[in-house]
Image (cartoon, rainbow, N blue to C red; front, side):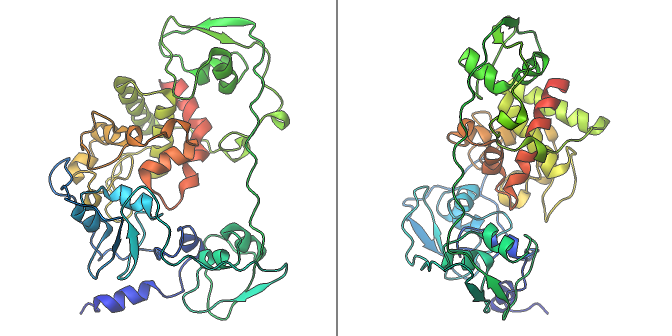
Length: 391
């Protein structure tokens, strides 16, 4: 016999949950279990590519018993992915009765702001039932990473009542924006040929894409075309120690040699990107995302009902299982834009305002809403290499 809903929800609120999973959420809006209860349904939006319009959309909504994020979004004529993003939730998050969800892209002031206590150096906190690493960090004006580091914990550690945690009163300092490297002097030009990419050109002439951007007045969203003359630098790129750190440090980058199946899927993503006229950066983001989500394979399985190259879910409006397993269609849905096969019911990369100026990993995360957003950026360098190799 199944347990009553209230008892099953209470089980989610127990403290035996990986600290990092809980800590990755923004604020006490949601409790994320190590494995979300698959018996909690997430309903699909009505109609192919349509969102049911709402006459008025309130700024917030208080969760009622039986609600799901998808049903709340549908009720108010919104996309599930937007409600998740506005509330700092992921597809794995669990909502509970009484929780207040924002239904607007403009963040309103919270009804009950968290009281922050600046703790002196060496201060400690005794864990009580209901505590999360995130909540403890908020209380003492520090960060999740600082609390984990101070206590020798990892993002998979579990905290428990009675445990004493060291806390820090000073939040981690914000990273200074990287300085823009001075453009090297142009010594020659390169005439773009079919299949060229800025990354490949930079590699050929021993320079960087950032230097090519500066020399030619380009941006990460620029598109180059055959016959175009690109100014290049013949001098090697500056030494790593003097080079500003990119979105992901080179030392932290992942790499892999693709087999025939993976090469075929990479070539498909590149081909569709070219067909849609998106930039090299958009294609690289698509390649990195597919590598993180499915290891560049069109999987017929995944977390809960996740499927395909991008692990899209039928239960959250990405299409039927058959549609998602159509790699061509799922790639077009990932890119989104005017030709999105899902219409307005899902949000692809081209539908994210300002995605071109986001960090590589943040742009991918804006589409995927993952519990592990930094993983996409680890494949940035490799994605550009695949683009140069298979494009």
